[in-house]
Image 1 (cartoon, rainbow, N blue to C red):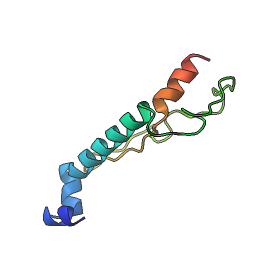
Image 2: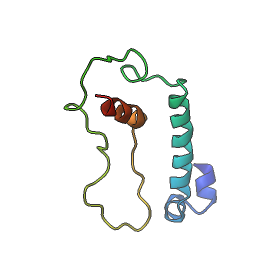
Image 3: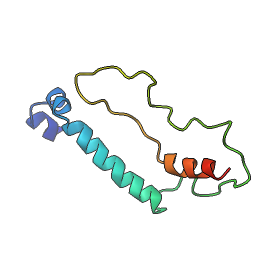
Length: 93
């Protein structure tokens, strides 16, 4: 937080895209840890039920809006670590 405040504050950093970039970098690192198996999600990459049918129970992109609005700066869109694994599993059902 001190670094953000020293560089003109949160809103200015958000407008410049600095906050979004830092979040994207952290998310990418976390995704790599998940993909490598370092991060465990029970039921997804550990103790999964291979015979369970997911098609009727899963919304793959719950955070993406159907009608996006124009914004002053790029929004921060939440993502699921398991999206790729869930899509692969659905493709094989």
